[in-house]
Image (tube, rainbow, N blue to C red):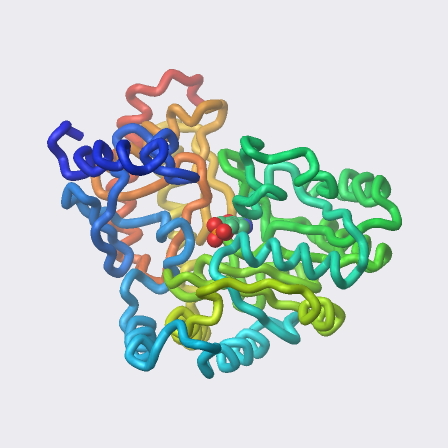
Length: 412
Ligand SMILES: *Cc1c(COP(=O)(O)O)cnc(C)c1O
């Protein structure tokens, strides 16, 4: 990127008016060298950066996009609601329609409430669990991401020990550690919080084992605590009824956001009747939480996901990508380890501690028009058709070939 590129010019201006140039997961220090920071457009499975380059996008706006950018059915529903009104003095009828649709779609859900971000939803789950049980302790898997406020943010800057006083950590998929954590707070356990699957940054992703999922359910029941599934990242990509339908375990409360409105700002908490009264008792709200446009978009999104067999489409494309990349990595003798569900993969190279090889691979793919992430969960959408996967595989073949030529590793 030359100093004159539009992206570089925007970065220079941002440096003066945005602390650190950018915050959070998109902070300047976290965007790999060679990656653009600014995007101007998205359509289908493609995005265009501020320098005018386009990419097949495997981040899907970090999860919110699931039917393709600018999906015509979702946009039409949103446009209709924009004409009627978005934020008004009270909710629009879309609120009730969306809650009914979610309860029809999600087996554990007897009710739903809505907010804007995943953090709102996970935090409301924790608050409802405490209100409903009159207990304080929340078990959280070490390294799991549940949002960006003091009780759960990955950085301890500005966070006090008191903010975390009632959070107790366990290891995902480790029944013994979950038992030990539960034992350590006997009599005061409000909730066990689990991710839909282990999708920690830079780590191999793991589906929950049956043993772990069942143990979590049993321990929550025995302690009269809530089982909360954080489905913010995986929601509607693995199973429309909730990700733990795959292991046959139903939570008491679940947090949703990201994909539920195909890119419009919306989050939801779903819960069962056991926590209905508690959910009604807490005070949680926000200026934009009842706005109708995102809800109209969500109704259209969920309806289309259901009618288009979206999960099968994403799974088939994800499998095609995984198989193709696996064969290429073997051809070049590269220790590439793919993990996670095929429609939410992460690509890691064995022994690649600081993601040096992973970043090199991603940068080479980027130059050729595919946008991957070297350490974070990636996402496929229904716009990632088999033809798009084949186009991507031509890019990954070239990128992996280059990585193999320069890699300083022991061939497998
Ligand atoms: C993104 C994410 C959150 C937080 O959602 P925000 O909308 O960023 O507040 C919570 N949990 C998981 C698993 C996530 O991936």
